[in-house]
Length: 294
Image 1 (tube, rainbow, N blue to C red):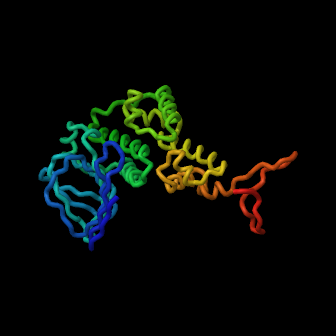
Image 2 (image 1 turned 135 degrees about the horizontal axis):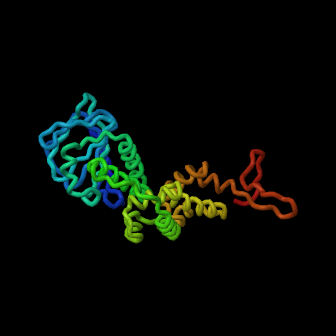
Image 3 (image 1 turned 45 degrees about the vertical axis):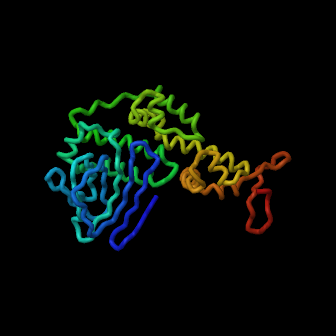
């Protein structure tokens, strides 16, 4: 991830390991104005502070904070601050596999989408894209965003909701169980199970009440707990259980268990020998003295 700061400009850009995403771009500009230009990817834009004014196909548009803007590829547009303090924006550039060319006209006619659900989903996508190791979560969020965008751009062609598919959900769970350590990309799961990625996510969430990425992280944390109780250090535990690094393990472990892996491992207990004996704490007490080996 690269970042630079210069006067009133702040820019951060990176390319995550998520299929369909060509670039993530975060920026704060107070005076800079983009000239007319084009992209070879779909531009999915949200503004956190201020607003952007831009021209697309000779029509002026704006991006207040509750709006998601979708600019199609190969269509000229510009951009400039619409407020005195400029704007702070987050952009994800999507290759042309997520949305078909047939939607370009609809996006040109109405690029600014006021949809609270879509706005929340895009914000959460950016959060997951910024966390190495959470690629499956980002893929899951992106595929639902794509489905939402297609529904908004083709309201007359939206298909009726599909019924629950427990067989497909079970097949995906088996795949995830087999790949707890190495992980599983959503597009690979879709190819293996011959299903659309969005249908996969919905089928799994509907059957088990949890998204595929949440299930995978739960399984990894479960394995991590067992290793920590066996005395394996957190750094080694992170590697063995498929986390990106120790920080990645710590973030998800604390979310699910309530304490960090280090504290969890330090507080493990060993059974005493003898009848009626309960577990013996192994962490050091306030009075001093070690109650057991670490």
